[in-house]
Image 1: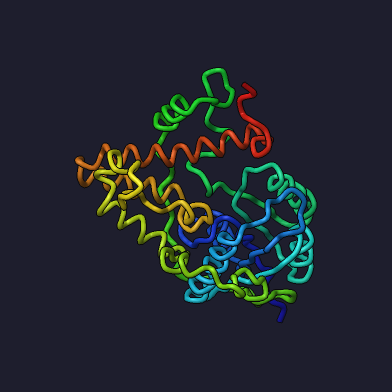
Image 2: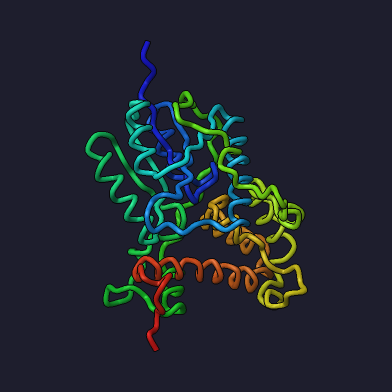
Length: 305
């Protein structure tokens, strides 16, 4: 008997199970789900990862694979240009659908647009917001253009309807068989070996979705109340330390928003710290909006003066 055609989930900067719309769409399709990560150093325009990011990526992928295996899935790893790898995957697995979370840099969007054009004529291809509270094109000035200043941008975000509530992680996945061409995570050689300089990283950080959730919970329990006053003191353990977890998508801004709003509702004394913390999440949103509307931002000054 022929196996049902799978739905592919292309994980990128969304290495989590909870509040992952692309993964949820694959599950809702009713098809077996094939979860893949493509380590792409070949596509034009993509920035090479530094050593610390490579270390984090290894452990984040390992954690995601372990979490998927607990519920019946698995993360299959590939190496190569994403367009080529996905073309072969669709052909070899007879995949019926492909889902991913959007990215907002020029090179990444160009790759995604080309893949949609090529594969979308044959299978269902859909991208989802999951990296930001709101898509960059939805936050506009009164004249319909993009914001160039943070304060009015953030006022507009706060005046908009609340972001959708984050979705929980799935309890079960009907995992598709491993396709040919998959490699072992260690084959990517992301970890430093000779010398192994990552001892400080191991002592200070634990990548992965569960660690991200613990960090947020600890911050809201212990540090957010005084965050507005203490966050600028380097000697104080006063910040959330969520930055790398957000960068790799181990936690979503919607999860942070919902948990912080809940903390405020439970204890109004936390409001000042929570408001300041959410405004820092707002600066992240603003930066992505600037990047989306000004794709030369990585190489050219935003203000020519």
